[in-house]
Every structure is written in C-alpha cells, then in structure tokens.
Length: 361
Image (cartoon, rainbow, N blue to C red; front, top):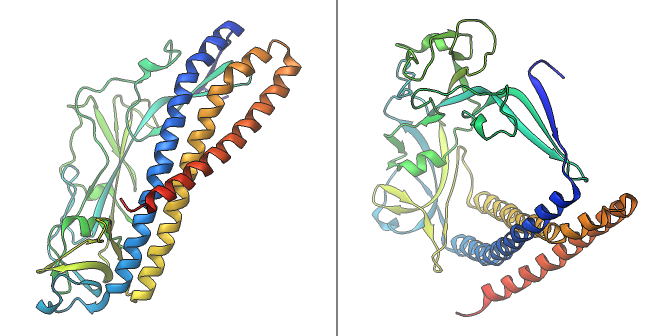
C-alpha cells in the first residue's frame, strides 16, 4: 500500500445485514420495474428504428453537395462533398491564437482523494482511499471515513471540460447547422496544444489557486507551491482537430441546409462520416449501428433484472449465513436462480414488447 492509499474495513453483524437486505428488496423491485420498462420500450424503439432505416433506404438518392438543386427540396439523399470552415476558434477561457480547427477540446482533471467500496459475501465493506486524477472535484464529506482524507474546497466556479466548435461551415453549397457540425467527426486524432501557446493565462486566484506550472502537455494549477502532483491540483489540457476534407451526410434537403430524416412513424435517423461513401455503404453502417443499439438495450435490461432479482433473494442468503458452509451453497444457488429468472423474464418481456410494437394501434 502506498503512502497515498488507505483502507478501512467496516464489519457488520447478522442483524444489520438482514435489515439492509430487506431494505434492498424495495430497491430490487425498482430495478425489476425499470428493467421491464426499458425492455418493453426498447423493443418498440428498435422496431421504429429498423423501419425508418428501411424506409430511408427505399427513397434515398445519391447527390453531390456542390450545387443546390431546388428539384431536390424535401428529398432524402446521401450527400457527398467538401468541408470548408470559414471562421477561426479558440478556447473561451484558455485562449490561444485563433485557428481554423474542427474542434478545440479542453480536458480538465482534479487531483483528489477517491473512495472505492468492496463488500464481501459476509457483508463486510472495505473502503479504500487513494489519490488520483478525476474529471471533477469529489465531495470528501460524503466519505465513510473523513478523518484524514479531506479534499480541498474551492472558492468559486471550478474549471470544467469544454469543447469549442466553428459556427460558419459549408458542406459543398450547403450551410451546416450546429448539430450537424457537432455530429460529424474529424476522422483524425486530436493534436495537443502546448500550454505555452495559451495567451493571458487565468491566474486561478478566484478559485483558490496560488500558482501554476506548465509542461509540454498540461497547464497545472496548485493551491500551494511545489512540484509534482499535489492534492487539489487542477490540470488543463487543450487539443484540437483539423477539419475533415470531405464528408458524407444522410439528410433531407431544406433550402441551403440539411435536416434529419423523419420516417412516416415519426422516428428520426441521421448519419455523417468524414469520408466519401456510397448509399449502400451508408445504410450498411446504419444497419450495423442498429444491431449494436438493439443488443445494448436488451443487455442493459437483462442486467437490471438480474440485479433486481438478486436483491429480492438477498434476505434468504443472509438467513442461510448462520451456518457458514450452508451460506456459501445457498448463495451460489440463489445467484444461479437469479440468472435463470432474469434470462426467462427478459426474454418474456422482449417477446411481449416485440408483439406490442407490431400491433396496429
């Protein structure tokens, strides 16, 4: 164990564990209800998404974005063309020389005490504390043990991660909206901006920092003088991405702009990629995305149901722990039973959801 890591173990008696297990029953019921809702809703969403993709595939045409043809107004098309960025951007707080970038990302991390928990089969909870970089300050007052692991309190609004995008972008003859700009990847790895390029660096005093230091990658603010990672430090990293040269966007022509396609059932689909693709390639990628989303939704619902059933059965396991060897056997059996119930229950809800989604109402 390093000097920046501590462990505290909280042991619980049988009665305390039994009370907590009964309290967990209500949480388990909530998990099961949420699982049923997610799985049922998900099947309807999945079917609408598939129908929208099939409907779009039937009517979509392939067009070059270089010219706006009024005859294509309201039509769904796979547009291909060049990307041209007209304005320059910079981070609003950590300003650099303005650049024609596709996006500038500000990544902010704080050096904090972090609490992790691990509960064993006997209900004993081990709290481990270690210092690490996290994306936002941690409230250490909520820790189980606050005796010597206190994160500093900042004076004002802390720095947060942020992404800046250009606003004046053309895709061929079309003007891209904010959501289309944000939805289109650059297709390239982000390039680090040296902190030396930041002009008029904020002092950080309004937050509680008294000094800052720079490396080739990070600008680090500290609450006390010194080198190396210190509790409360805030490090800033700026990165930029160059604009993509060309792109493919599936959208409906609306004047000089492009909007998402909405199916006859009101389901919206969109697609953009920083490369020249054919219609067949676009819909092949949409189909793959649809399949991934389908199993993510089903998998999430299954996990929620499994955890919910485990919570419902937890009091039985606690009772059986009176005899240690029996508790191990019963615990394993209950986990297996919860798995079987979750599989059958999820499958039943999925079938009901699929049937309900296809009913004509």
